[in-house]
Length: 242
Ligand SMILES: O=C(O)CCC(=O)C(=O)O
Image (tube, rainbow, N blue to C red; front, side, top):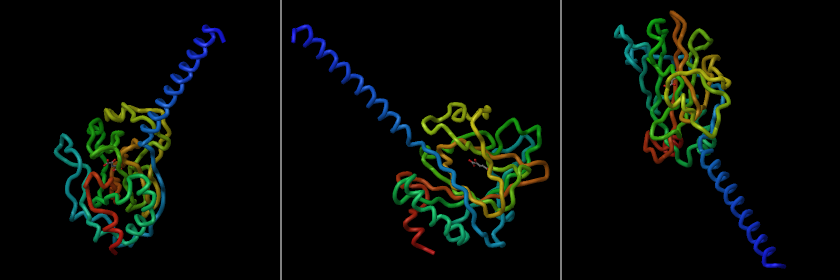
């Protein structure tokens, strides 16, 4: 081999190594970003008829409208007060939640809330999470189990979410929370009392729907967080109880 040929061959090897390193870098970067994968699993629980929204316990939720009124109300429920059917559903989803949040994820206190219709003149500001958003708590790793407490049609202002989000990127318009419209396919949590949705609230765009005049929507929700957030109580502890 002439010295020129030997030189060309060394350059070719170096070029191929640079190409390989570049590919490895882009692959590692894509895998790292993939931590924001999306989850939306529908199910159903047969709720005890006595488990309904308790107006007497509820206090204002969200922002006050210019007329001084709130259009959403909520209260919290401790694990001991969760209906047994919902505890069973959480047990059934335990493996899925662990895959998403890691071993010994935490279970927060639950919220039960009622969204009411917002008068047309106040709909241009966000009163109860009705703008597209991600739930950033400590970070974007959190899940919620939603349970409908009543039959929900379009008129009750169903929970709305993106069915096929871009799993690699957080959407800038959603982070800005400016409620700008986008073309992605949307789904709604309409259905019967007891219908459930296990949903990646941190990493999938979602928003509350607004009930039609005179209507409302009652829902139960419990949030799950990675153990490092220290929010709520260890799932191992709670799931080993009744
Ligand atoms: O009320 C709803 O349907 C959605 C609530 C929500 O997105 C939130 O509280 O972050």
